[in-house]
Amino acid sequence: MLSKNIFRPDIQILRGFSVLLVLLYHFDFKFININFIKAGYIGVDIFFVISGYIITKIIYEDQNFSLVEFYKKRIKRLFPALLTVLIISIAVSILIFNLFVLKKNLESVNSIFFGASNYYFWFTSTIYGFAEKNNLLFLHTWSLAIEYQFFLIYPITFLIFKKNLIKYILLIMFILSYLSIFYIYQNHPIFNFYFSFSRVFEIVSGCLAYIYSKKIRVIVKQEFHSFFYYFGFILIIFFMLFLHRASYHPNPSAIMFVLGTSMMLIFFNKNLEFLYRLKIQKIGSISYSLYLWHFPIIVLFNYYFIEFNDLIKIIALLISLIISIISFYYIENKFRRASFDKTLFYSILLIILLTLITNHFKTKEYNKKIIQFDNSYLREESNLFLTNKNKLSWRKTKNIFIFKNDYKKFSPIFTDKDNTKILFIGDSFSKDIFNVFYTHKEFYKNFEFARYGINIDDINTKRLKNLIESKTFQKAKIIYLSSRYKETDIDLISKWIDLIKKYNKKLIIQLKKPEFKGNNTKNQTFIDELLAKNIYNISELNNHGYQNLNSSNFIRINKLIKNKYSNKAILFDLFPIICSELEKKCDMLDNKNQKYFYDYGHFTIYGSKFFGSKIIENEIYKLLF
Image (cartoon, rainbow, N blue to C red; front, top):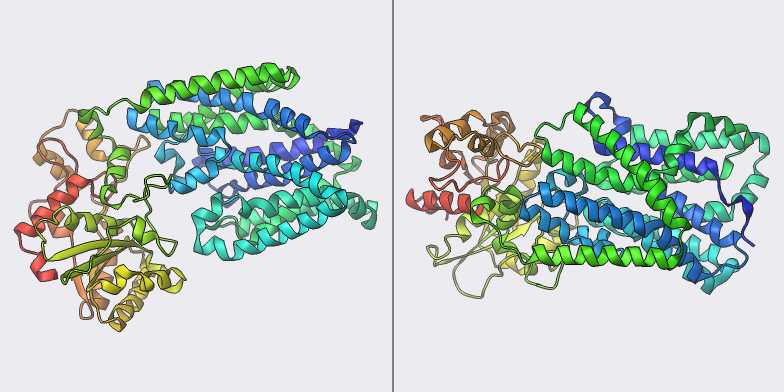
């Protein structure tokens, strides 16, 4: 029989605490701008630990455990709310989003159905911190995908190995998962973030916490249980205040809050029941609905309101809470008590509806007059010549090359012709300068162009070996380095100079490109905002371009580079190509309103063609090559 003590109110407190961390992290209130909140992303990781604990508890305490019944209960618990969020979010986005952004969101839906959205977002090179700017409604489902994969595999593993062996299997999985992130987290940070195995040690720690909880509670004297509960909480807070690194998560130090969460699960006792007075367990009860709903609401509000300030964020938070409460009582609870057939019918109905909507908009054509102002579209279009040659792959583009053969997929390949081969290396700015020349490849008949995505600081990582061993590097006669340099990169440039010299290649270093005011929360450039005010005069718009230069972002860096390396490499400054100090203007768009920039400094394809033409007209290429 199923244990009557299956429900643990203290776990709801922990869930409530976790979802509050996630909410504060995602809403990013300016009036609570403290380091503690910036680590709120670990709320998801705490959920992973809790899930491992609860599922193990369910399996262990059910003497007549049935795999089929387990899956039915998971479907009833999870699918109706998830599908409801998907269908309503898509319905609202049809009214708010333009066609390009809408299609981008619809493309992720199938991966959510199959519990693989974490891999979808990895394949599509999605950086989690830029979710709102990318207008991705369902990016938060990456964590649900990992949980679904765990729910699918773990019970089967348990039935195969039984209680006697499962704990040893779990210990092995914990060790392998934890050890793997020592290598992955710095070398492949985006992959590490989305990779299911990188989170296995978190989930398994919850499993092991339940399996060994009775033994641990016997070993540790009862009077110390509350102490270890508090100590576990302190470990979580300590990590959040002093150890979190959002760009490299999870990393080895994550073991601290994982251990802390496990201790809180193990050592809760009657002396701590006063914590129920905080009522955080009520938030824990609606945590699943709250997690599902809050993120699409943030993205939609962020897109709709140009000024997504704290007041609007508070309104969005209140709406999230209200909708989540309604969802909990009328979707989650209703289908939890309903028959499996009703849940299945409801789920299939919504899946069919979502499929029809996706197919309908998939065939719709873009309005060319509108799309030329869509910066998300223009950004993707800028990868036109650097798109994955594998048409079946989810991953269409890649900014930084991680794996050995990435250069073969995401860049033109040099031929064996006896001509001048130029390899553009660096971050996304190297893509821009590659496009500047590649869009005029018919003019440069005696040249070939390729690109290799690598960060300046990769001179000290294993990625450098992949670059050196690539055929594009070996065949290149000229290496053209371009990056959005930081002050810490300046000393590293000397290492690049030494490296290129070692391989007897010519080096061109492009100075940091001019940067302008960044896009607003609707992903509009300042030029878009002026056009929306019916300011169409090209001369006036170009003057605004000069006025909106963020000179502090590039002038100082460029002076430092010139002072240090002017006699060691060819330095090329794009500023005179883009802007005129004499006329106090910067070229921003043409007379057909085709923009040259889609954000603070990246070229559109039109921009690359335009500035490439200026390089040809002024014969600047002769000075370079």
